[in-house]
Image (cartoon, rainbow, N blue to C red; front, side, top):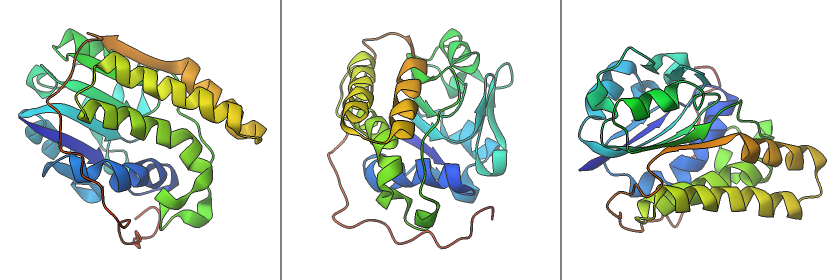
Length: 222
């Protein structure tokens, strides 16, 4: 089995969320990586089938996950069940826990982790070229990174989910920024885990990049 990583990179929110995964998750995810303009519906639908885990960022609605420039890559009632069947899913995307997450479970996904409301966090706009260096965003996104890395270590969906929740709580207790604390608590309270809590995938090698990726020089919204 392989793995699927889908990372749109066209506006400040997607650059921020995708940037952290590009830095800390991409080295472990294998060759099937839909980054920026590659994150399209056709590619996602075709290349996800042989994967045992799908990790995706992108704007979302209750019934939709989007990719590059909000292209719909997964919509309730409009995908082949083979796209999600037998897979562990982690979507860093707003609201997909309402309808899309349950729909993937109904279509055979082993587990789904995401959010039932908007995912909110503080972003330093000056870090748009190197989003992984944003200390404000890191308070919210690094618990997600730790959760995904736990899945890639072979931990269960429940263990990975608990790691993310513990990260939100820990960072909320440590920060003196009231806005960041509120975002952390909000995301923790709206996090959703569906399906089999014991679902897991084959462990991946623990590969990390000693240096960060080169700056993302493509301007925002291109």
